Image (cartoon, rainbow, N blue to C red):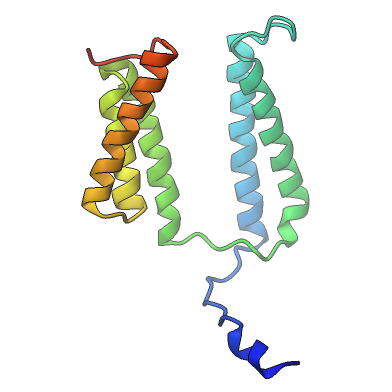
Length: 162
């Protein structure tokens, strides 16, 4: 083996310990429950037919995929060693999900502009650790671009402030 190759290889960074079988199984069960909830919700929306799809058809298909992959994870994922234990950094995922739920709740009440602006800003500044300036600029540009694309160009009736 060439000595220069050894010098160029990056030192593997220190990683948290593997999650273990119980963590893998718990993650699979949580994902499966979400998949089943999606199946039920999309079924209630109505699936329609392939020639005339209902509003629940694509959410149903995605929920089937989530549920099936969760079952596969529960069966074969328990031996995986590449997953990491939950730690403080895992809470970022919880914050991201909570902000998405808040977006969904606020959008029908006050329109899409302010909740989308706040969501984008929070994700960039606090989850992505971007600078204040870039977080503000990117958030505003993103919401303006969405408005121009969906409301102006495509004329999609999104809930709006004005």
